[in-house]
Length: 171
Image (cartoon, rainbow, N blue to C red; front, side):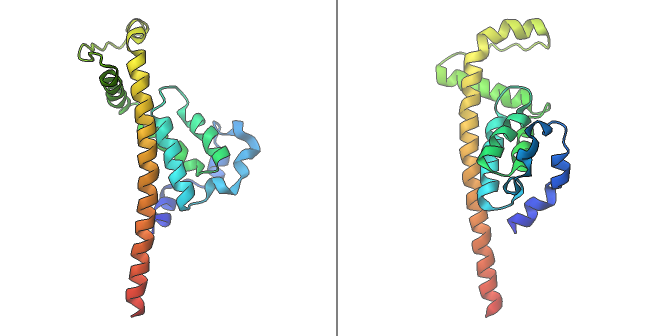
């Protein structure tokens, strides 16, 4: 079942409550709905987590938690999904966002010379911020909607499959 698959990879409730970065939310973390595994909470968590994975700011996990708490979706999944844009994948995904934003704005994005320095960042950021942020917004909204829809469909498919198996066993 999808619920058991998800539960296998999640940390315990106590481990989340004692996380030093999430302590800023205080007693808000004691809401049991933040740790439920059901179709609504997991699909919503995918939407929140995938959206904030594309937000190019530090502490994406805190932002995902800040939205997961009032929307009462699974906190752990929301926070974990922002790690799709980890230090290894971030350059490729954010370059794709920059390229996509450039395509939408009709800009030439082929003259991109990257240099790992603070000087390059301050100079080039003034030139690339519009297509980069537009691409990040497009990818955030798109991946959020697709993630939500995929989880809802996958969960439904899994339930229907189990019903069919139960019917076969009863015969």
